[in-house]
Amino acid sequence: MKFQVKFVIFKISIFLTLVPKILVGVIVVNGKIEVEHLSKTFKKGNVQAVKDVSFTVEDGEFFAFLGPNGAGKSTTVQILTTLINATGGKATVAGHDVIREPEKVRRYIGVALQETGVDPDLTGRELIELQASIFGFSKVDAKTRAEELLNIVQLTDSAERRIGNYSGGMRRRLDLALTLVNEPKILFLDEPTTGLDPSNRMAIWKELRRLNEENGTTIFLTTQYLEEADSLAHRISIINDGEIVATGTPRELKAQIGNDLIALTFSTKEEEEKAERILKEHMNSGDVILQNRKLTVYVEDGTKQLLELVRLLDQENIEVATVNLSSPTLDDIFLKITSEQVEKEGEVHGE
Ligand SMILES: Nc1ncnc2c1ncn2[C@@H]1O[C@H](COP(=O)(O)OP(=O)(O)OP(=O)(O)O)[C@@H](O)[C@H]1O
Image 1 (cartoon, protein in one colour):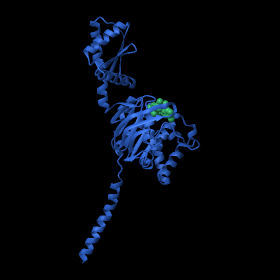
Image 2 (tube, rainbow, N blue to C red):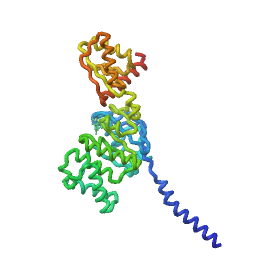
Image 3 (tube, rainbow, N blue to C red):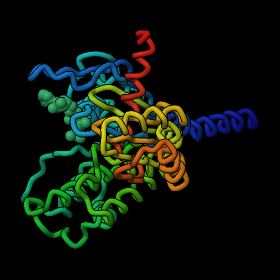
Image 4 (cartoon, helix red, strand yellow):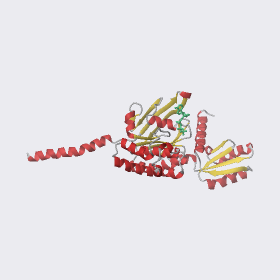
């Protein structure tokens, strides 16, 4: 009998030990983002800002949405963070539908948008402490967290100044600090480093990497800087005019576009057309693009291939007026990807 009682107590105690674990297991959040055929048309001006966009961001992934002004990056972030509704398609964030379950989505995300409204009379430190207290930090913990975050975003020296007197760059860094207060499971950052100087940008990169690597935070970042996406993201989707035009790891995308870019100009139209024809014969034709009187050539090793190209053209008696070697910018990538699309469409239509 005694043994039976002990056994029952033993079973109950095991159960009680497991319950919290089971509960924690149940509420473990999957920081995945799934987007299917998402579209957004703004009635005002009848602008189709996002056109049938689909992608998935895995739990713990660092994902970048790279695109120029007006590409549809902010609109996508606003839909995923439940601030505006899509006009078509479906999106789930942390397993919850952004339209049907916005409160549940908001529970798991942090958002740093390009423009946010804050009380201009508070100091930077006061605002972070206030945010921490909203998230349930004790007074002492809120102070410690504010100190840490001010340090990370390099605002310690301006912590006692009123926010109304902050510059645009300082406001942006403060917004990021506010987003980081509770270390959310999924972080949405809309162009977090635009307008920041290199040292501030580096400090923010470092913190974002730490959050992703140490805490497993899923990060969805939009940027216009190729270098930023390349340095931070596991995967990049390039968005242009509301459409995703390419997706891959930085390495895959670079392999698609080449590491270096050689730009050549010529004195006459005849020479540039002849040069285009010859270079297309000697290399992958998709890597040679003539546009706006400039012949752009995407290559793997610019320093080596530059001499070869110039020599080749020289043999054909084509005189090069100017030559320039550089790394591809976002504009160059678009030029390459969009010209490839035009070429593919041409093939499909039998042109
Ligand atoms: N509220 C709105 N009403 C009407 N058109 C809008 C609205 N918001 C955005 N747009 C338009 O939708 C398109 C996409 O804008 P969006 O802000 O998403 O681009 P973005 O890639 O974030 O650009 P940026 O890098 O300049 O922030 C643009 O043509 C923009 O003018």
